[in-house]
Length: 358
Image 1 (cartoon, rainbow, N blue to C red):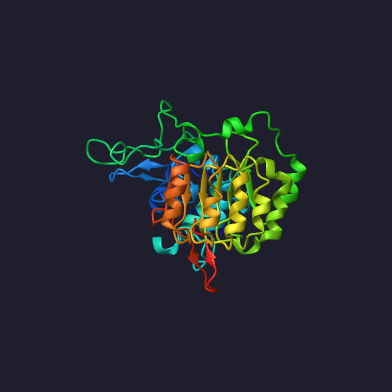
Image 2: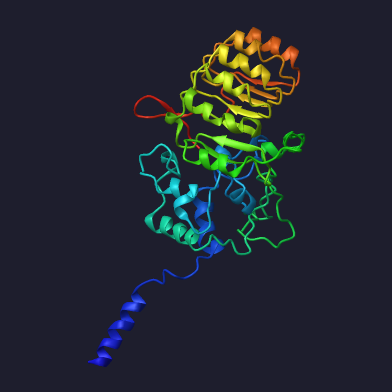
């Protein structure tokens, strides 16, 4: 009898997978990312079509630096999958607008895949020797002489990508280093006070005191009143994403108090001429997305004092071609987009409200 019990015990142990076994990122997690995620979430690169392709939602999953220094905040919090944005979005209901991969890209990750990623994160999110692919390479540069992608998820350590390479905020001529000079970090108690709100707040990278603020998954909760919650950190905000939120012209007064604002996304909001006119005070602004807003000629003309402005998206606004031409004459280095050459617009939720896709 004892021998039989021992045999059954051994059989049971053999039939149960060793959940405590350490997850190997390069062999078990990276293949999932490579198959289901990196088509959209890889570092900016030049495609075979000669155009620059940027990562969707500014999320890069093809390199160690891209994952650890994501502009979207804490993609992976070692030891705590519950606080990791990555695990949050892959376990949302299949019909949720924010689920990753998005519905148009196929079925959600399997239970086995999400459980494996959870085990990896909760086990410490160890990447081992993996550092990722070569960032910013063109499609052809990433291929070997047989047409295969050179990257196998490993690195020899000789060509480790630099943090933030391929990211717009780190490109040549970026003002972030200058703007961060002599700027003290926001006190921890202030950041903790904002942590329970609808905003995701993170450093722009490299432990900079400058901040990126996004409305990740909370667009319906953000209106003019909630935007005012950001005033205590207004001096530190360099990148602000308010796409598809409920802000109106009243938000302009708050935005005007952000002297280091470099990138601002206001697409598909209710902001109009009077709110946009306030942005004339944001002298460091480089990129402004007004797609699908109520701005017209008056608001666009008010942007003329922004000598540093490099990109302006005006598709589906009331701004006339004549006004756009005049603005270009005033700001000859400004790229104005009045057609569909811009980030994918938000999808509409069941209630007709636009929701951002990441």
